[in-house]
Length: 96
Image 1 (cartoon, rainbow, N blue to C red):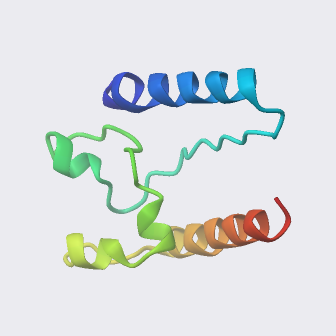
Image 2: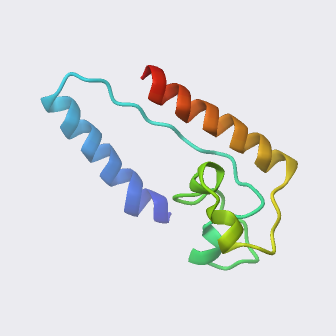
């Protein structure tokens, strides 16, 4: 709910405005992987699974999770996501 109201609507509006003015492509990605830790722990009840939160991908690109959740080690799946997301972002930066 937070993501829809606070982020997705604004992102959609920005993309539509961009497409109305410029011809360059716009790319979206949708992260559906909720790892061992999530920023949703900060926004709500820590006993419930609220799914993936805004900025959750940052912990797979930068070592922010280690500072925020030192008590939650990265899982094997988290490390796979680090490899995958790093590859996706670097390939996009290289080739567009």
